[in-house]
Image (cartoon, rainbow, N blue to C red; front, side, top):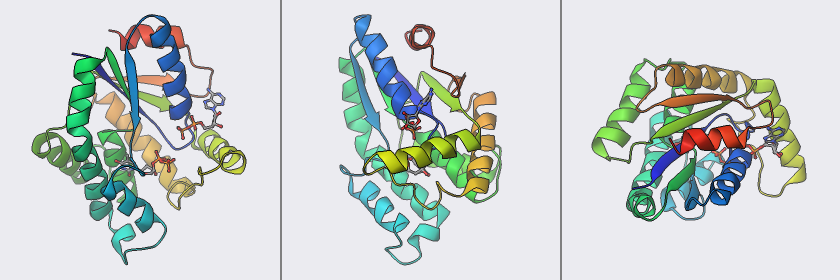
Length: 213
Ligand SMILES: Nc1ncnc2c1ncn2[C@@H]1O[C@H](COP(=O)(O)OP(=O)(O)O)[C@@H](O)[C@H]1O
Ligand SMILES: Cc1cn([C@H]2C[C@H](O)[C@@H](COP(=O)(O)OP(=O)(O)O)O2)c(=O)[nH]c1=O
């Protein structure tokens, strides 16, 4: 049974970059690694609906925090069987965003904290009801909202298909989201967390040690 490792953080925190670097380091050590990223915009109809709602389609769906969260959750539910198979066949499965993204972004939109009703609702839905695999480690890439926004804006200008959506360009929302993430990590919500400074160059060797337990 492989280890399920989740990378969380704001848009522009460096999750994709860390996923790539960590995969290279782990593979160089001989580990069998596979990765996935949520939302699975091109592979799942629920994630497709999320993208459309973020563009203003589907009436008031995009303004419903719970409605959007159910779609993100159904995307993961549809991936659960594949995730379990991947865990059976690999040493490490690395995920770029998972259940905690739903908790952090939804709570931030509702101006709640990590100990509020929304985060408890996400846990009941995705953990208790959908039975999604529990991560062995959740890594929070912590960066200031200014740095994350600066990186995301730069990426938006230089890479195709990396436009920020309206929530990702909302600085106060990102700030509240960062706070909920910090609280989730401090509480070791659902499983153990590791907080990493995303402003610096990542220490892939040290991280790989933690990932391999
Ligand atoms: N540790 C880092 N130091 C400097 N720049 C970084 C670092 N990590 C990522 N970046 C850059 O910041 C931008 C956003 O990174 P990315 O990995 O796409 O973030 P995310 O997946 O969290 O949205 C990219 O242009 C990337 O090259
Ligand atoms: C996976 C997930 C993402 N989100 C939010 C976080 C981001 O604002 C947004 C999109 O995720 P993101 O990973 O930033 O996708 P991309 O950069 O490819 O557009 O969705 C949730 O609210 N709940 C979730 O479960």
